[in-house]
Structure formats: C-alpha cells, structure tokens
Length: 228
Image (cartoon, rainbow, N blue to C red; front, side, top):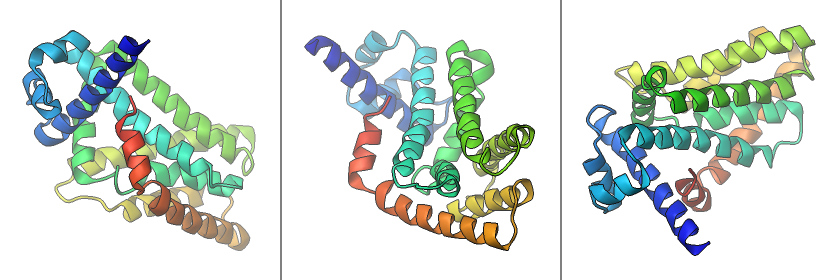
C-alpha cells in the first residue's frame, strides 16, 4: 500500500512537472530530461513511471482536463439554482488562474497531440461528454429536450473555440472577456427576458465572487497541484 501511494505521488509530481514544462517550452521542445529537471529527478526516474513521452503527455492531458473538472465541482458546492450551476460551469472553464495566455498556448500544443495519441483521444472524448452532460443537466430547466441538446453542444464548441483563440492570439484574452462572450451566446440560446436576464446577472456575479475566494485559495491550488 505504501509503495503504491509513493508511486502515485511521484506520478502526480511528474505530471505537474510535465504540465509546467509544456507551458514553458511548448510541446515540441518538452523532453523527458526537461520534465526531470522540473521535478528535480533524473530522466531514468521519469522513464520508470512513464514508458515514453507519449505516455507522459497523456498524463499531462489528463491533468489539464482534471483541473477544469475540479474547478466545476468546487463551484457546484456554492451553487443553489440551475442558473448558478450553469454559471459555475462557465466560470470554472475560464477562471483567471487557469485561463491565461501561457496555459492556453500549452493547451493548443496538447490538443494537437489528440489525433496521434489514442489515450489523449479517450480523455478528450470523456471531457467533451462531461461538459455536455453538465450543460444538459442545467439547461433542461430552461429549454425543451431538443433545444437542450443543441444548446449544450454549441456552448461546448464555444468553450473549445475560446481556448483555441486564447492560445493562438498574439494578445491574451481576459477571463472576463471570455465569460462575457459565453454570456452573449447564452443569451441567444435560452430565454433572456428581463426577469431571466436578472437571474443570469445575479448568478454570474455570485459565482464569479465565489470563484475568486475558492479557486483562488491556497488550499485549492495545492489540492489541484496533486490532481492527476
């Protein structure tokens, strides 16, 4: 049990180191040696836990998606209505500590690996399904079943598009700008009369405030750091 625990901790540390290496060097220039340097370990230790760079990149891909998943779960704890849970999904995907220029650039590098890596494909499919399921669960309170499926798909595509644009743009896209872009799209997909608009406004304000407290906390950052 102790040996397994140590192995899992070491793999988590290496996943974090690889994630940071991709952010700093880009995917092509990230090597097992550089990952080892980031983790303060030798290349041999890296190979002991991951047989090759492809396996390590799959772990990095898993980590980048798990950070978003953890953020949604954390904000859900403070969401009490479908409106607030809907905004928890949106804010979690674009909170400033995750959605920034360097991380977006790293994500673009990682996403290019998906067509060539079966494990990355599996992780990305699972991530897309999770986001779509989260949206459907809340949008069903606002739309009929057919509209719910269509709106969930469109919002998921927009999330991917904003992350892609954030990584490819010469200038960074601010978190608040991305969230406002999501709000504009949402206003075209769901009822947005005066009463509904106020509910969305209040939900966004509350969840963004909670995100600053919860997702910006030292405790959450340390827990996320250990997530694989």
